[in-house]
Image (cartoon, rainbow, N blue to C red; front, side, top):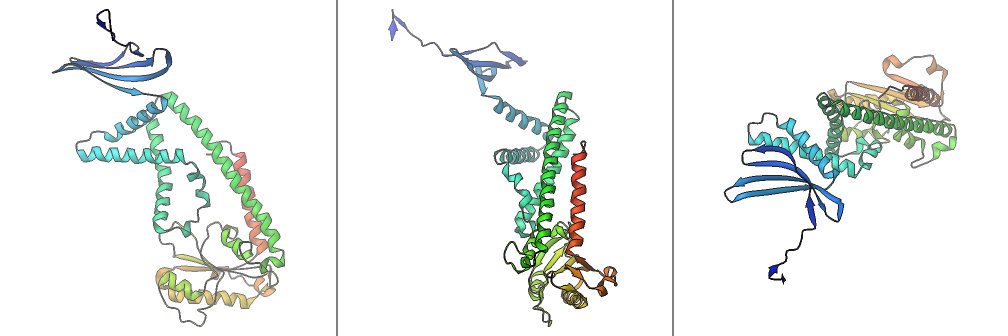
Length: 366
């Protein structure tokens, strides 16, 4: 409303600091300044301002950075983008650089938002995953190594302060890694103690469900060997042969069921090259020659139908007691291992006890 013949103009609630000139050229400049609410200077933003002279006179363009989070995100994107652009000479090269950084940023954003994604990977049953998820997990594991390699390579050109900060991060990661390993190893030692009690309780072998000796071993086959992964458990030879090699088994032993068929390396592309047959017996049963013959028949049938896809079968027979005849005849050279529950429990316990000592004593380990 006019006052004394003049039009009143409302004074702006905002103010700006003097600019810090970042770059000047003949027709303009790029600067940084602070914008804030006059009555509340704590409510400020960092303002990027570009001023240039065009056909319509002086023109101004501004961009506000509201907080440290905005700046860190911008800085990460630019710091990542510049090395990937390099000496680009085509639109495709620029698009590829943008795509690469966007995917890395999206990935880290998801992990920051849902850290439990990484915490749960230790419980994944790799063998039960569909093929697309197996491939995704493989890429995730590979990405961890490539990200670490990339960070370390970029550190070579960073100021000493950045390297010091990275070393602090490594120390934190080391402590976290050690704590995770200690938890993992102590939990396995705890399971060994529990399993030892179970196998000395005859009624345990009558149980069904998750707490049966068979299912406890299925979920913890590392008790027998840390390199084993279960492919089939308590399935007929006929079904195993049909699923793995697409053959119809007509052998008289086709309906027999080995306790476990395992592979020795779940990440080996030729994973059927070395397979392991495991047969476990109740504690009341003394392991004798007929039990070895039983596992020999499993091997014979599987060898017949697997053709050239399997280079070797190793066989394990497990029980509480071993007959004197089997004790006096070493069958290991033929690929048959006769073990008591006590044998592999002692071996596994010794390994993890020694492992725990190393983890707890090695201060420089990462």
